Image (cartoon, rainbow, N blue to C red; front, side, top):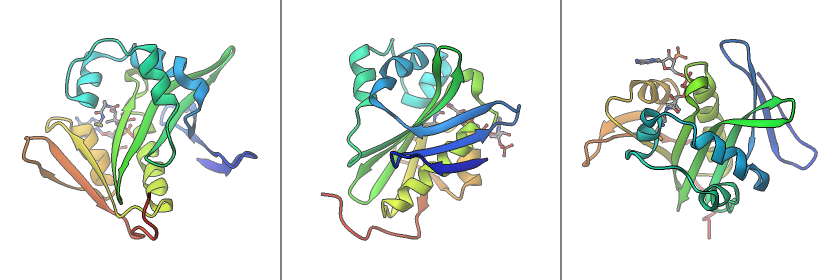
Length: 183
Ligand SMILES: CC(C)(COP(=O)(O)OP(=O)(O)OC[C@H]1O[C@@H](n2cnc3c(N)ncnc32)[C@H](O)[C@@H]1OP(=O)(O)O)[C@@H](O)C(=O)NCCC(=O)NCCS
């Protein structure tokens, strides 16, 4: 795996997955709306349910545009992209929703790219993002039978417990803590 800062100051990291394929992890961009739409609308119902805890219909273009046009103040979003002849294909979307000094992670890796190490790489990068922002804690909610998410979380240091609603809440205390409040 290798990482570098792009000329624009944006984050770029290239990861090689367990099957040898190469995926770039970078911040989401405005132009990613269609790529996000394509990815979300080709996920299996199981993956959608594990991500959103409901079976939901197709993502609309408006929703995809909102996901691509985030304010870096209250959300950080990374995408996993593959280069292909005619451009790029988004295969994963991983975000931190920030509230005060706590961040909640929401992550999805497209079915075809699961179990190859990409989820682990993305959560590792989100931890780094959380530390850079001075967040105190990161949390992830997932369903109790989502063994893969629980395994990835535990591997990266998250402690888990069952929350009031019967879902699993995983918490990682970050060493930095917030230096300055986000206003
Ligand atoms: C959860 C998710 C993000 C993980 O991403 P991923 O790319 O598939 O994960 P990785 O390949 O990095 O890691 C998977 C790990 O689970 C392990 N695993 C696979 N099946 C498992 C099982 N049944 N029980 C326990 N661990 C399992 C793998 O061995 C691997 O661990 P290792 O690298 O230590 O060997 C992805 O599966 C996903 O998008 N799921 C649907 C959405 C979701 O659940 N989001 C979380 C809630 S927001």
